[in-house]
Length: 378
Ligand code: MG
Image 1 (cartoon, rainbow, N blue to C red):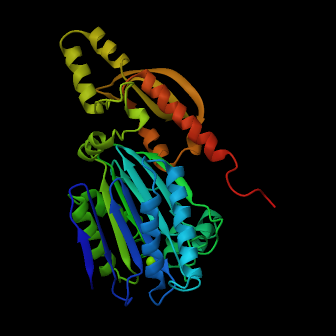
Image 2 (image 1 turned 135 degrees about the vertical axis):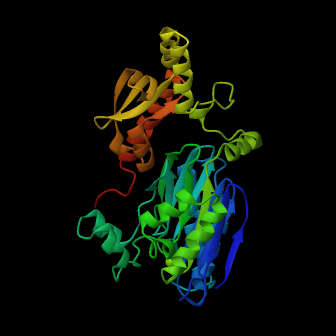
Image 3 (image 1 turned 30 degrees about the vertical axis):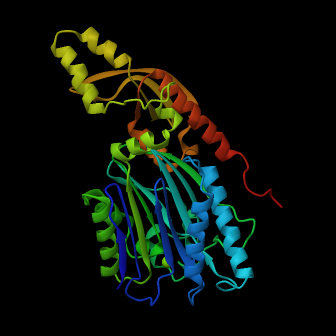
């Protein structure tokens, strides 16, 4: 068993051959803010050529910001490079690769994806799969003919319906996610997800003290479960430090989190807000607590739509400090799964204007996602 790993505070990755295969056809990339995993197909080293070429081409064409459409264009460039290499006799005819790429910009994550490798986000202790597999069994699960658990052991589970290296018109999925400080991003190949179910992955991500520890434990657990395939994992912590680093570097903070001058806004944790509000109540000034709460805002799912509130989400000691500002027409179901999951508890922002900006962004994404973006019907 060979394992390579790189050590950093807020991100880590490793690729392991597993216990059955003789070679490793997976590849991964860690060039912050860009991260990627790729699972090569083709055998006789061709898969390794395809996956390595894919991540190198991705890196060369990646956008400067966490822009999912720009990242998807870089994935298409990688697709063209793999096709061209096979035509020129590098690797083999029919070689291909999956590619799952993420750009992390503060708490904003852009993902572009083709194949059955995956991106997950551990958000407030819960694991959410960001990507949808392009595989036969995933299609069967979506159509209701197969359960999620049966898919993991199905004999045709490795049949993928979309990959780099064959179709010059291949389309990559593009997904943008608003994560939170403290969330943890995972990119992985099917050598991990074929061996461990989501509950096991969630438990390791939730309890590992660092990305490095999470990577080590995920690879070890996949091997303990059989190690049937190459295992590649990249774990990235969405932390204050990583966000600050990028802010200092190139002002890379998304518009929804910067004020007009471009300086990062400070968003207070909910608990700190309650402490401040209750301190005002205890000081005998309920009016001050209400005034303070009214300066705060959050967005939350309500009846399947996005609602904007002034105040602080949740309640404390039976006290609620929140006022409905607007129940918008933006359907939660049109948003990415991570944002939808976060909206259940409410997403805190610094003031009503920021909340309205956030909803405007959701509205654009919802309409972009529902407009026809694939080939016209025959
Ligand atoms: Mg694999």
